[in-house]
Image (tube, rainbow, N blue to C red):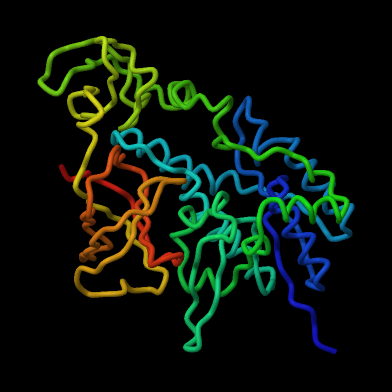
Length: 359
């Protein structure tokens, strides 16, 4: 008799990972669900963190009939994701911690744990699709439900990770996922989606950073592009390029954050037309196939923010995991610290961290 493949499922307590685990169990996989305890901070109990998420994941496993465990990865999460989040803000950048968590935790530490325990695969509830071509190379593509597509967040995955990962809901819509949850009798079938960073209570990033990284709190000037002082702030970490609300100054016309000068502790604001940029420079480039698709510049589409639009560009891979991207038409609000992800149609080719916008 052929032994059923085994899969360790990362269960956040939400409907997507719950349905992923339940569907795999229904399809004959030997499923073990694990909820990762990532955060040991006061006030955190929402999204995929906290007692309620743990209880929901455990309830799904009990209803479905597969084994469930809690695993504490708080030390690894703090050493990688939180440390990177704090450091990026110290450098005046706006990071996306979900991307770092996918790279270091879900498809890093969690995947290593699965291998050590002898599992064939790991699985998550991400809305992405994967496939293997005739030459054995794995590919990563956008989820079937474009409104829920999470390929931007998984551009850090390469051949090793994709060969060992399953994404059961990636080829279906969110409505279909909820329908499966109802059919399977899962207690999270109508649980709302989380829209917050899991470790930031109340989605107040400024208050969270002021509490945990107090050295970021430093008064400075809010200035116009000519250097004229318009007001004061108490930390550049409270701002991001493209921001309009909460700037704290008014001149009678709409103002946006157009630059953050961490060295001089200044926030530069101006009219929206000053947000346009012709390109960007990126580092930490990861290519899904292992290498860039071309040694020289190539045409592609790029996405510069989660839920953003794909725009035509020329991408030039450089040495030391760097790249330069030139947009075919200027793009607004390019925020250092966010990711640029390179696409060929629906397929993810790779991506990296934006370190500088090119004027």
